[in-house]
Structures are given as structure tokens and as C-alpha cells.
Length: 76
Image (cartoon, rainbow, N blue to C red):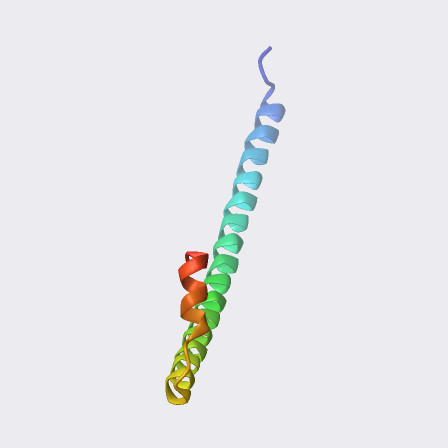
């Protein structure tokens, strides 16, 4: 079955519109991923700073750092 000119134009338009929608969705996905990556970096930096303070407090108090022992068991 061959397509009429009207049917062909309909399907060609459908292709163009859905391609634009997919491109826009890809762009939005990339934007959201960038936000998540930025937030993860912020959280990791905060955790690193807290860990440094915890390590220093253990050292100043002369006590064992229990986080080091936990990390050995958890595989972080």
C-alpha cells in the first residue's frame, strides 16, 4: 500500500515533531544530571571537610578514630 501525499506529509511531520521532542527531553535530562552532579560534589566536599575535622578531633583527644575501623569493614 502506497501513501498518499497527505499521508506522507503527516508522517514526515510526525517524525520532525517527535524528533524535536526527543531532543528537548535529552537536553532536559542533561541539565538535570548536571544539577545532580553539582549537588553530589557539594555533599562530598562537605563530607570530606567533616571527616577532616573528625580525624583532627580524634587526634587532639588522643583517641582511636572509629571511622577508620568502620571503613576497613564496609569497603568504602
